[in-house]
Amino acid sequence: MSDLTYIKTGEGWLYLTAVLDLADRKVMGWALSETMEAESTTVAAFQMAKRNRPVTASLLFHSDRGVQYACSAFRRQLQDLPVVQSMSRKGNCWDNAVAESFFKTLKTE
Image 1 (cartoon, rainbow, N blue to C red):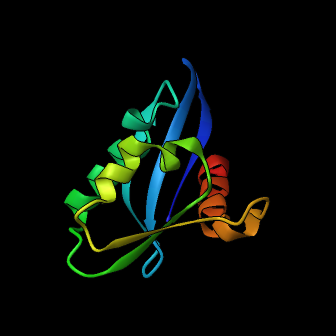
Image 2: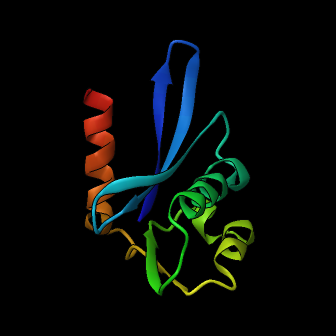
């Protein structure tokens, strides 16, 4: 599962993308970026996740319907892997509740 949020820092706003493993709720990959471009957000976080936990069996990768997950740059990352991409239903924020909860906890810490 993956999602993207923004975080206010002393030097301005940054975008944080996190890839979480729902089996153990570990953050497998993350990326901080000054822009919302897929290469520096979703692609970078997914590449880190693959390095930290290589894809060895079929898995479901869930996210919202954001352009960073729907674009060809990100979808190419899933090619040739046993990965099925899943996206939230339109207008249903509950599908990404685990990621939203993680970001809420992170922002209140």
